[in-house]
Image (cartoon, rainbow over all chains, first blue to last red; front, side, top):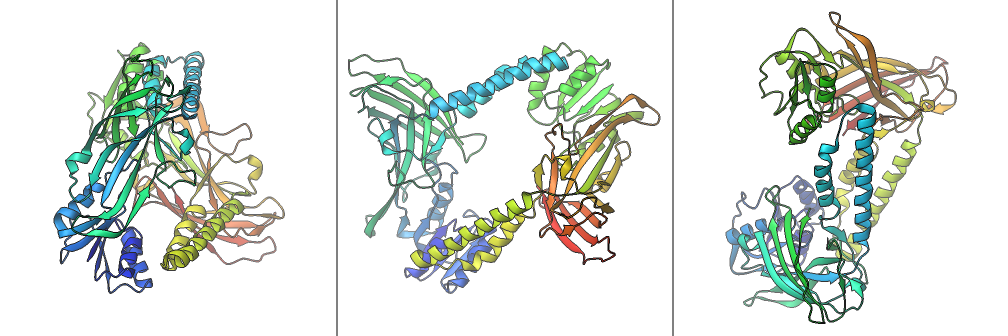
Length: 311
Length: 311
């Protein structure tokens, strides 16, 4: 007996029925539920798959389930905060000994080189130039001094161009050092508290000479490993790391370091990382990244702190 | 004494003070109010302009006003439905004999030629082709038949590509006939009821030979004429009609006729037009346009009805 959390078109639920489930409960909050129902009928599994429109928090199932499946992953795993609903589903409806698919998840962080920082800085400067011309013209032709807003305008554009994380499909040759795991999670035991605030300290060794730390990049992988009691027959991994054979729609998230420090092989970066749910919109995340560059020579540079918005 | 409804940056309120107002109340619902306050101070009119954060429905002024100014116009005049707040301001706070600026507004409709219809039809066909390949691949490689959703997918894409009004800055030479007014409004007496549903019957004479009625186009003008009691010293007009010297940010709205009938000089089009506030989102509008082509020869073609969404 399977529960699919956020079934969307219903495709995972249909596959579950095709794979031999006795019963599949496919829960969807939006009106897409109607289309899922249609697709379930058209694929001849209406006797197995029951589409239920509602939120995980509100709906009631007639029985507990053995397996929970869900495609809940957002950009850098946690954006969208849909895993809350999966936790709710697990705590309300999973049988003792039941399994979660995916069963495990990891968030990665890595130092990269990239031209995106220069591009964004240029865009930012063009925007500020346009603003300055607007201020001059508004004074000259319309007799109103707009300069009082320049500071607020700059802050907003810094946030938009330089402090917002950027979606990108990176090539593996953009990695300039070792990736590290900043969060590891067992979906069977994870709590809302532990995903609301992710904090980590990691050391990222640089393995390229004469380059710049343009950014840190974040991605995730999830595993279909089952549980100790009920391991998967064959373990499957979904990995969204930079891949020369092409990426996924998740891509990677790029967190710009401006200015970008020069780094060399043998250097290492101590990163203190936090990612906290935004107070203004719980589906978005506020990140604080502080890094200290330790040069191979033994010199240690002052810590640099950056705020990044994962929007 | 002036009231500015939806002051935004405060620019109209500052101009009012510069033009000699004794007092200006500048009302703004959003946090932009803070920036308006800053701008008012920086421009030395803080003793005249008072920025009040709140909605017109909720706030209280210490006195009635002589003039209400507002930049409330959306695409095709009524999109965004901000004029409701202006009506509320007028009914609550305008002195008898007071004036509205703008004081009058008109909505226009005209027959045009345009390549946008062919472009959108092509985009629509590409989208449907992509969908059909997706259905084939999903059946072949993943064993799920998605064809049950083809009808709904087509309907959604027809709405998006063909039935949604399109922003465009038209050139006057794209007009193939006489524009007509579909709505005329005196801002001093207009009611919420009359803008919630705009209905009109107009005849549009075609004045170009061997062309196609690709679309109807809509735009508006507003006048700063004052009232009979208090006429403006100098009447000003803001016109968003197609203009060879360049357009405004409002542009015009293009309502595609698909298929586009052949028309000739001497033909005329009887249009029955309605524009009703959308039930799903009161800031958007649902339009029904039915036209009958009367050929110069005397032949009358069957009526064609189109639904258009102004989003």
